[in-house]
Length: 284
Image (tube, rainbow, N blue to C red; front, top):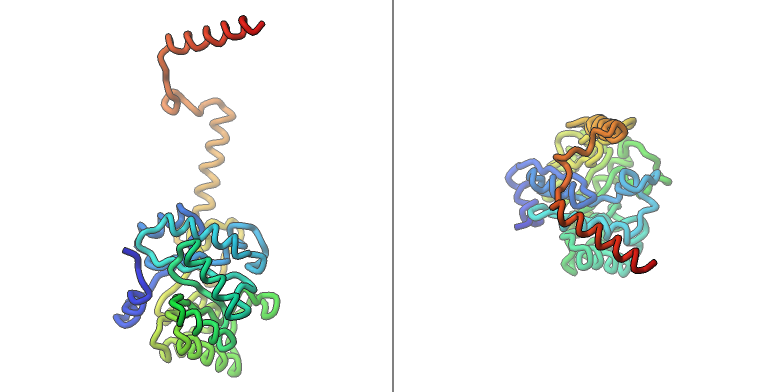
């Protein structure tokens, strides 16, 4: 049985920390689900870590649906949350249409969108229609061309706005809010004012939960490590070494061996070859 938004709220009430990780395909979802991660975010970060874009901006709704479907198929217990990509919720009507596709066509159980006070009316309408919504404030990657990739809320006016954004999202019915690249003290102040959980990424230890990008925490990058990420493995090196060994064995002719091959009855093979040769003679 899948985790629900009610379960997520109970985690906050119990003081239980909430782990969330991004997943982008069947295999990553299956591994995370079996590891007991209760929330899987199919983030539009796939634009960078899977599709090779410089930001999340180029990601389309159709691309999101493709990856969300795979994550849903690969998981059984986790709550799957799908990002609404750039400019797919500019109006209430468009947001409804986008959310419908994410839940009905892709099978996610919730959506995530970026913004605070400005998108609160859209959040409220989606929630009214039965769509669970996770908010996202602080550094909002879809706005990178406007705000740059840096910590948000360091100054009093910005900090006050982020607090108001969080309160507005909660009032609109969001079941949780991602706080990205926010000073730890501000994230704690926001968390203490809300009844719904906060999920931090680069926002300190006092959020109700944490989210990390699959590729960051597993060390799948060879040359990039965000400051807010902790690598729990260095899989890029491990995978690279495995591939180099494979290529070397293929070149040397030491793979595959009989252990990796199938057998057949020799008489059946001879009969097949004779049949082919006879057919060739007849055709001539």
